[in-house]
Length: 176
Image (cartoon, rainbow, N blue to C red):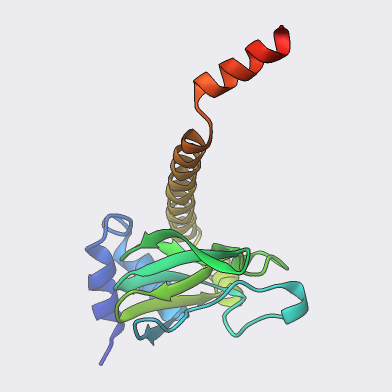
């Protein structure tokens, strides 16, 4: 059986939650719900306005055990973005009104996540301001890591598309 203490112990082993105070983390776990997903079962998919909201659209998640692949759909093909692991957050857009989901998240192994519903998180933020600040900093840190990965990938991809010599040659042709 999964207990709050076992979730606490699992999260305390991760870099993001290592120094998080036990009391605040237990309160966060208490307002959440542990969900278990099998390999290749979507946690959520990208939502479009015409499709409406999904069951988990107003939540964000913390990976307690396992890891997930994050992807987007581009030209009717699923494009891999990154893999997230234990202690990382995902689905942060769920706490913002009308944002919807912009990605797809699928476990690559049996995975346990802590779902925090927006409504419960807003109450938590009012009651436990210190712990709220810490979880927001963790979320920001996770978002920055995702952005850095995307920037690296984009730079690498662009480097393959154009070389500086190609640009120099084009400028030379234009200036003649």
